[in-house]
Length: 539
Ligand code: GLN
Image 1 (tube, rainbow, N blue to C red):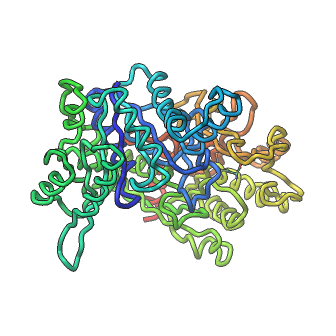
Image 2 (image 1 turned 90 degrees about the horizontal axis):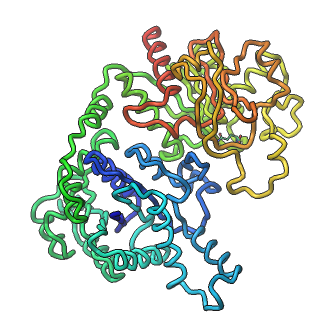
Image 3 (image 1 turned 30 degrees about the vertical axis):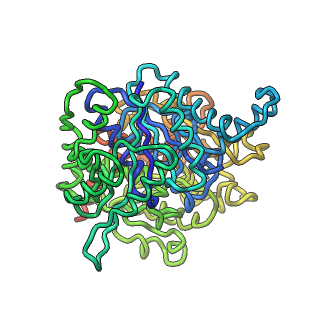
């Protein structure tokens, strides 16, 4: 087993997660089996209870773990199968240490940051590798920036870890920023030097330095960084701003042969230089599509780039599959409440209502769903978006006045969306939703069945509390709604569709967590196809 540790310096948002994921892509294409993991130094046990404003999207794994959105990059860029042990936070570390102390497991010793907390961190790395004995390389990204007090214990643990397993099995990669000072017309290396100095102070000498640059990295700067940071010149790798899509990142990092450097450092022998044809082909289709569609995403956090990350990525995957650029229009549903759907959304080829919590903007989402249904605009509702479509249909087609979800209106006369019995008594907010992958049965002869290639069983990931109320199934069905998939275990509604519409589908689960480049999710692929048809007929 070999280990790569990816740290970051100078500033956050450097694309450290993408760099780690891209190294994963390149190593996999060399035929190595890769696993990925993220350490997050914050004190929350998981990001499940954090606001999207703080944290962006919460990415859900098969086992129901609510994790950092970088794990989404890892799953999209590699074929690694991730579970809750692949995302460790300080919250989890301290929780474990304190529980052990209460159980008396430290046998009367004084419990200290070193060794008890650092042992806990190292223990997690061993736990991950032991549960995946077939893996060649474990890539661990450390969240935050070197120099933060929060990250110190993680870095100290890694320093110890490298010493214990042998430095020849470990590769430290530090991602930094080379700012360009416009007035001077110069790229500056000093922040990089200082950040590496900070890392060396902790006892970690990076083997490779990845420099984020707007422009190119010239020879002089490369030499300078090499000299002051104590690495070979070839080990200073440029990571340029990619022009079109994040999927160019592995191709960019390959230019300075990062995968070769890693393989050599770790003594991984003669693995073939990756061809990456499938990846290049995908990138080409993203960059030079033949067609174009416009999709309105009508959600609460539309101004936040990261809040619906996996949805935007899934639209890119589905778009590439159909040789189509998906132009996204972000719609503020509170504006829809004020000015109406036609005025705010206008002419689009599809409307997507993403997941969400709380009632702000929900009436606007209901108007957006109505607009899509009545005007035969393709509609795709995800989780909350499916519940919204159900409320709209109940109110305006079934004539159930004031139908609503009990999440938004506790005293609605028609709770078409409500809590299941087992959710009712729950007090804790963290990790108490219906979470993770579960199996559903697809109804034959439906649009859903067609999209899933007539599979009768599917597995999708969930993150929600509320469900379509079984008391209303019949009334909705009588009015023309089709329940096209139900959960295998409890018979809960998983997918709804309207057959007399070109594409009107809502899924209670989150399909966006299972879409990859070259393997678009069938529901996204179907939605973009329908949008393309809409564009052809209307343009
Ligand atoms: N708020 C809704 C629920 O809890 C939808 C959740 C979501 O969209 N992820 O059921």
